[in-house]
Image (cartoon, rainbow, N blue to C red; front, side):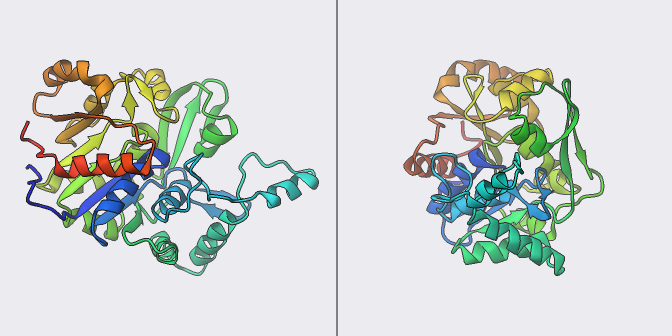
Length: 323
């Protein structure tokens, strides 16, 4: 099941959430020929806000691949302003979820398209084309399957309440996916997996970004049915998340917040795991826990565009199963 080094221009499917996933997807997009990458994006944190359909992860991936994302935050638009927010404050309304002035245009177009009968897939393709993106960005589903968190302090919270309003500080005691069992993977996503030479799980939060994709009807089975490698890039470095609550959440839910825990979490799905050099000491234990799992140790922190391209290139050149 190795991706041979002779496969210079493979067709790659990447599963991604927000900022971390978008970085690796960006690296892949820059080094693969046009049309050779499909990014299947989490929609579990989609929600309605002031009458608008917001798709945070889709927007982050679109803006990143379109090279217009805010480089400081990783989300939102570079140079965007927030005059709409300031005017709302002037009216005595202080929304906890801020939308940039230019960012609003994305939500207006998406919401109007959905109201006019377009699917989320169709609207995303329209937006991506307008941004000049040469690769394919797809929502994992056109249905609703929302991530919901049960917390110790506030009870049940919608994802954006937990993540933005409360800045992921509440203690999580459980996670559910509202719509699980009914929401299905899109035909476009399934078709991309069927023609893939490699499936990559980006370094997104396993519980909040990747699991909502895998829980969709038909997704896990489609990946497992492919006789091509599936690899994951660990979102943890030395037991810590580069960004966001991945390590915190795993600990609260009694999961091992380490590369061992990541390997265990994706057991039965992945053939290879990429880990950071800071976790090199865990290789021996990983080989005991997951003897069939191929391992690749490298610098995984993506601070620059060059880092993204280098890491993407190493993954594509990796002879998975050859270690």
